[in-house]
Length: 339
Image (cartoon, rainbow, N blue to C red):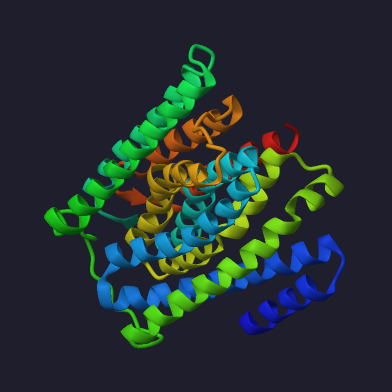
């Protein structure tokens, strides 16, 4: 299926004149490739543990999002980039985490994970939220050039904060933040093959992502969808397919700690690393992107952060908490669709 979907997308890209067909086949190919990537990550987690496995899944899963956003930045579609960043953050905290908690909760009455890790995640999510609010607050007080400078400073500081978090969580306090339970899993491939599969899948995702972005404006205009809805929900869902599949499968196997690490860790990586990196990369194209988000985007991120913190802070989950997360996601999706 993976090879078939890629070949179909390639044939549509090179031989079809229909932007809609090209967009649909590219989207399907990315979803299959991301699912394959998630399978490889789960195999790597067998050798490295849930913390490293979850981090790798978030990183390689976000690779698709970063690649798609990079081409959007190159095309100067900054509003859609910010919408896709917003969609990735709220999609991981509400949709991915919600599905994981709900479906995992149907099999296990209560699932527990490291509450200390949940507390640190809550602090980092709050930091990301504050960093995104500050430029919006000063947007009307400062000239455009100074807003760009402020955005660059914030971007650099967020990247530093994220790198130090990796040092803290993966090195100096690794045992302190490890999963409270150890799980025996079966590896699909050897460690080396699993890593190779991750890299190969990411390369193919990069190729298909460029095809997807090439047609996205035409498709959104023909369907009458706003850039906010396309970026926040369509692109975000496609780009985060790896996290969707891997996190849900792990939660259904009783590994909610790994699922939370994937969902929340991916949101943190988007907010603290991917978004700032895109701001810095935009400088290469001579048209810098600021980090000023719209009020609906900031509201969506704030609401998602609040309920995710509320549900995960005690280090335990049940199926009804998953329902709450999914309901909030549907509410925001409806609001964005009519925006």
